[in-house]
Image (cartoon, rainbow, N blue to C red):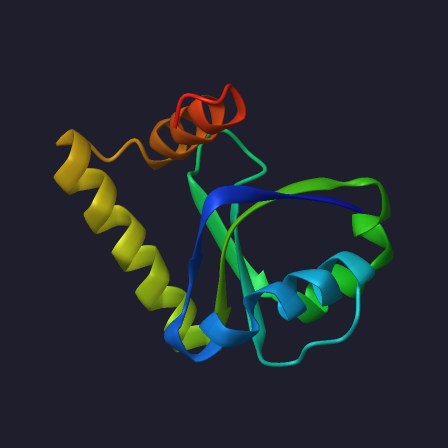
Length: 114
């Protein structure tokens, strides 16, 4: 599994102090029962997906690249982060093109413009 992280990763309040440790464990595929991962959706018809980090233990993820935009401490915190992302995108762009907003910001970051 290849994990790429969003330049301005969204992190729920309960995980902010442990963000780097959690990301390291995600990349090592260490079991983290309470952690939820927010990613850009695999299909183009959706914007975001979130699921328990435990799901990443499945062999299906061995050859998959995921773009992590957030990590949350449990289901409710994941729902809240999605709400926060949608609100931010709407306020900054007046639109709900979450995928385009996040990809654009990441692209500018990678080019050294952000």
